[in-house]
Length: 240
Ligand code: PXP
Image (cartoon, rainbow, N blue to C red):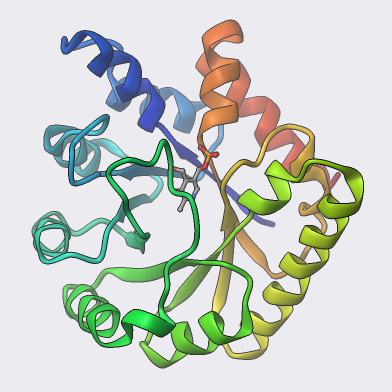
């Protein structure tokens, strides 16, 4: 059964809008766990626009399921991860001007730097995942650099403007999942998934984890964190 991993970045986004101490993503993570999620993910961005170093440190102490630290493959972040030792690090591309992570990591074009980051993280006993588009060359390169997992980018599927392109993006993701799995890579998925579009991916046996942030936090603002998480867990567990 696939696991729901909840991204609490946007709780920190609301906090940072006032630069004070509430709402606290650490509290949100505890509520998400009580509601049945099986992991917490946070993205420590280089510009610290939402999650702060203090959040990652506290989450390392308080998360009872598993903690995934999403980060750029840069020396500063690799050193932070090696000090904090989350259960998993998910390496993503990062641009300062973007609203959220916009595309998969170019593993093919940055093989040496990514291989170096992967090795340093694995040396510290951190499981490594690479956020990539569902493209064979990126999946081959992910295997070559020693990743344990790939997180296949579902943003193009989520953002598709019409049913035809949505089906085409879904087919591409499904092919990518099968291909990654045939290489021996373990597979997670994420980006832009919500209470509707996740249903097409729930039956896919190879998916180990769904990494979901915005749609859950958006619902939590209206119905509460525990209900928002529980409703997503139910969709994943019911299989449709
Ligand atoms: N996976 C990765 C690698 C991401 O960068 C993000 C966004 O922070 C997510 C999953 C979650 O995406 P969303 O907030 O759209 O659910």
